[in-house]
Image (cartoon, rainbow, N blue to C red; front, side):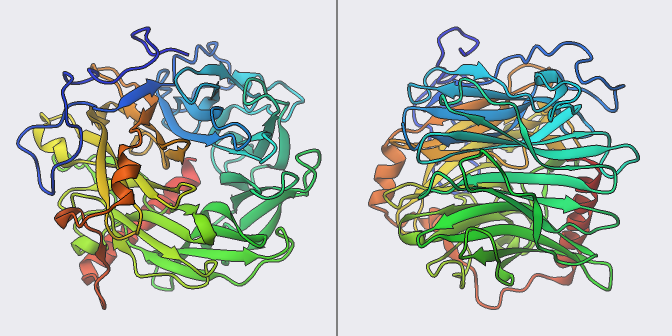
Length: 533
């Protein structure tokens, strides 16, 4: 799979001319935007070429036939040169995509070979098979120590909880590094009374027999417990999906993710959306723990309150469907756990920044959150955290610092990476941009994904979606190669002034108007999830 210029690798010139010095230079708007990219970028996505009408249902909403969205990828622990990626292709305005595209690299990400699994009709799902669904969404990838790769899909037909609708969590396996995939296996299949949403899958890092999948199972009017399925024989059989945490009839979980810690400790980290007696909805990051491969689970432990106001175009008010209310989690050496999310607490509710906390005792207690995005004066959104084997922390995200250069009708965003070896001082690297977020598909907000992806293999490897140059609605998935520079800087951190992480002020309290704004946005997002995955 090659970049469109035929070279397989692009390093600049998608929106602006090449130049040197891609790193940010401090808080506040610069006098000129940075060069489009000073790091190597490889484009993974290409036109999906799905057959017209392949989903087998009448159109419902706007079909965007070019965009890629919401990527996931994993580095094969049995071969660090083998990377496997996936993303949505041909996104519908009303939720999901016609199919999920998959690709594998065997040279560390320089070149990619496309593949697919039969998660929907447009990628091979047929009548009578597990993949007989009109749409697919929320791809998630993991790989076991033995090298087996697993892909999880939310596959569905019809609107969420609508009459005649159906949904499933499907898993396919690859034994050849992502070149080919098995027929999907259903972990759960539901009709119109339930909707299975926002799944993730995690291979046990110490035992290739165990792989864990989690998701939320929605039902009317607002319930959504955490569901869990496990295989103990490397995917040969799966235990039936079951509820492991139920927050109640007026609450739901969202964005469940399993983390495996030393000593066979499992954490399921998720967001809980609670509607109180006054009708206001709040969001909190929680976790539950298991010491027996998921057989039993603890009571919930609170990580932090989530206080995102959401991202909007400051000129038009157009909303961005970002990562608000969804946390990103990664475990580092010694079982230290890091959680990052989008939050407005450091601006008093004026705009979202990127916030991170950590736990050194297996998720039992959590440090005060810190803000890690370099420019706190602009909107920042959709973070992804990853800790590499040496303990260096990285967070990738978008921000709007260069939107000051945008003409009316454009919303300019950039992709960034910050790295740290101590969780307090961060070095920033510019990945790419500015690109025009207004050219993203509108899926109840400008949409490149509720989440993006980040891992490491001889350096950090962010995988994210950005829009293309021109006037058409189109986006593609790119992997950035910032090299060893970011990790080397983080290994010897220095105080960076405005780049330095700020501890959450003691007793920080948002004004009532800010809390009301946050509650309205959370409730709107909760309702959106029930209309559109």
